[in-house]
Image 1: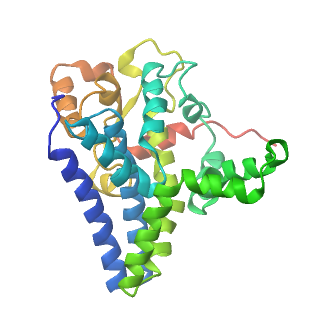
Image 2: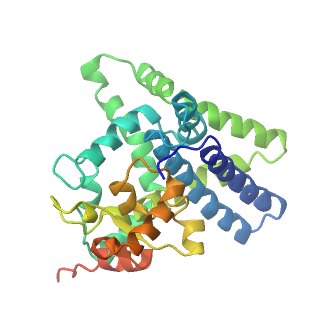
Image 3: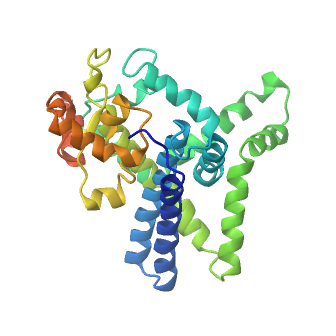
Length: 299
C-alpha cells in the first residue's frame, strides 16, 4: 500500500483545483448570498485540501519522482496559500518523530484541550471573522517592524524582505486577480479566494487539529493512541475533511502511505481487530463536544 502512483496524487491535485474552479464558477454565474456562502465554505475546505496534498508531498507520497513530488507540492499546493514545502517538511517530520512528547512542535495545538464551550466559541469567532488569519499572516511582519530599531533596518526594507519571502504566494494571487479581471469578475479574487482563506480555511484547520490530537495524553506510550481517526460522512468530507485527512491514526502508524491508501489501511486494521485499541471517533461533532466539555469556572 505504500507504493507511489505516477497519476493518483496528480489527479487529486487536479480534483482540488477543479472543485475550487467549479464552486467559484457557480457563485460567479449565479451570484447570491447562498451560492457565495457555499463557495466560500467549499473553497476554504479545498484550500485545506491543498495543504493536505502538500503534506503528502512532504512525506514524498504525492509522486514517485521526488523532483515532481516536490515541485507539485510547492508550486501547485503550498504556494497558492502561502505555505512552503521544505520548511514544512522539517517541521512536520519532527512532529512525527516526537508525537505527543515534549519535543513535538504541534503539542501546543492540542495542549489547551479540553476547554470550555465559551473558549471554543471564542476561537471559532476569531477564525470566522478573520482575526486568526491577520494574526498568523501579519503578526511576524508586525514583530519585525517593531524590532527594526535593534536591527537598523528601515520599515520599507523589512516589508520588502517579507514580500521577497512570500513572492510565490504573491505571484499566485496576482495571477488569480489577473485571470478574474480578464473574465470581467475581478471581485472573485477577494470574495472567492481571499475571504475563504481568511475565514473558513482557519476554522477547518483548527477543527482538524482538534480532531487529530486534542485529548490525546502527553507522553502517550501506545503508538496506536498518538492520534485520532475520525469517521467522516460525505458532508464533512466536502466542507471539513477532504482527501482522507480524517484517517490520522493510520497516518501516524504508517506515515509513508499515500493518503488514498489510508481508507484501505483502516479497513484492514478493523478486520484484524487492531482498531479496537485505536482512538476512533464517530464524527467531528463528538470530538468537539468532548474537547469543549471543561466546566466553566464560576465568577
